[in-house]
Image 1 (spheres, one colour):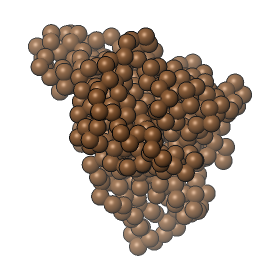
Image 2 (cartoon, rainbow, N blue to C red; image 1 turned 120 degrees about the vertical axis):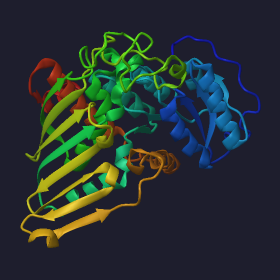
Image 3 (cartoon, rainbow, N blue to C red; image 1 turned 180 degrees about the vertical axis):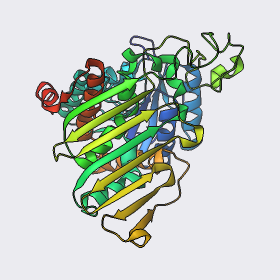
Image 4 (cartoon, rainbow, N blue to C red; image 1 turned 60 degrees about the vertical axis):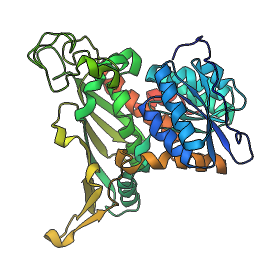
Length: 414
């Protein structure tokens, strides 16, 4: 999306019911895969109506137009300049699901134009941008929801309920791990530049940091290390800069005919093409309660081990589990073997992904709009998740322990 591009000709037969009492008129900015799931769910709910779409790719505009006509029976207005969509007074709320480097300008302008905003994570790519977005949201009086979908999963809601309900006593320490086999796409397209995403930690584990604030409270100090261990020259026996040049195809190979269907619509070599992001990190957080949490992340795990894991130890017991299993194990601290081990199994995983949260979040955002309140991932979520993850990125970049008071003093909650 670039500023100043001309609006495409609007499609005919635009929503007849748009603007009727009780119907929220939505626009989508960034018609990619992430927004598609949200939009499909939105269109199944009669309280929301998709009336406008914005992207610089005509094929994506056409794809979303077909989705709207199939689901809603009417067309949408088309834009290639996001400001023109946001300046439309007939739009009540927007979904912003563009590359990370554009979140700031788009969200700020949306709030200035008095739109409610569903903003895909992260909340800007640095704390200055986060602060701008939150100030704009506060001044507008409109509602912000960030795409922290994991707050809506039965797994993490179950962990939070057990921890905050005192089932393990006082939480003392925790270990978390995210392994993502599919992360090779981060070394292609816009993702491969730290200038576009603020750093791979900001892009990928801001989700996790939001969860830890939600479950364990405010942080006190943060230290982190990040590394480029595998996705670099020498990681595969080839010196090609793209799949087109490669004679020794790695498992991430994309043939020329597959480029148009790839996530980045490109096929740079994930090992040899220049990039400035890492592929693994370790973050240590000390919370105000005194407890510590260690978060690991890597992108070179086995395909079968791509998952999220959490283990929380408390004064009277502990809980642990893998997100993909949708089950929590509870162990009593002074238990007598297996007799004091319990398992809490949630519903089977659905097709919506992210541990069952994708189909839930946009509906909860709609509920909040109808009732005039935030959903789960609002202003406070946006602020503290950014403080933690951007503090972690700052620690790795500067090689020092970050005192959270330093960040909150410079960027206070609005």
